Image (cartoon, rainbow, N blue to C red):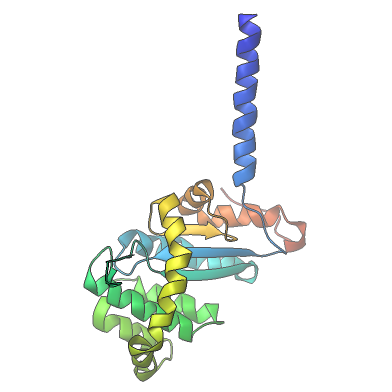
Amino acid sequence: MRNTAKIMYIAFVFLFLYASSADSALQTVNGTIHMRIGTTAACSDAARFIQSQVLQTYELYKEYLEIEFVPWGRTTRDAEGNLNCQFGENDCWANRVQRCVLGLLAGNTDVQMKYMLCEFSPPFPALRQRSLLCAQSVGLNVIEVDYCMTTTGNALEGPAELASTAAVEAIRFIPFIVFNNNISVNQHVQAYSNLRSTICFALADDPTTGITYCKI
């Protein structure tokens, strides 16, 4: 009786782990994958992830990817509503630049990717003057960026905060990675460990993509 109970328990644990793994498997939605990447300007982990994994994966599978960068990180508000960023005032300032630039480049993921790669490439962090140079490098006028910084940039804070708060609370890491608006610690860990494989295997599971071979 004791052995039977033990076998049943092992079987239950196996099924539970299998179900958990299946539930956390990334899948396409109408043949595409939406990926939200939460960053903050002075985060070296975000810099490494964007340089070593995001750009490469995007170049391979861009036709299937919708990438959304959210420059907010672990930012909080004080009682007066002022922002407090993980790496201080310069981090807040550069995040605001990034939100403005990404907003001005909305709909052009190729150029957004080029811009974010500039922000997170050596010499790092970009922060003050170099953040504006990165904006200029992708064809934006500094006057446009400055106008956003002093006016319309306020309206970009709410959506960034909303997109980040729950993800940071659950994942507790920057950069956080959220697929298809589904916050999953397992998917985040898989993607941060090997983004290319995570995306490839999800695409391969969808016969409409034509992806048939993936490397681990």
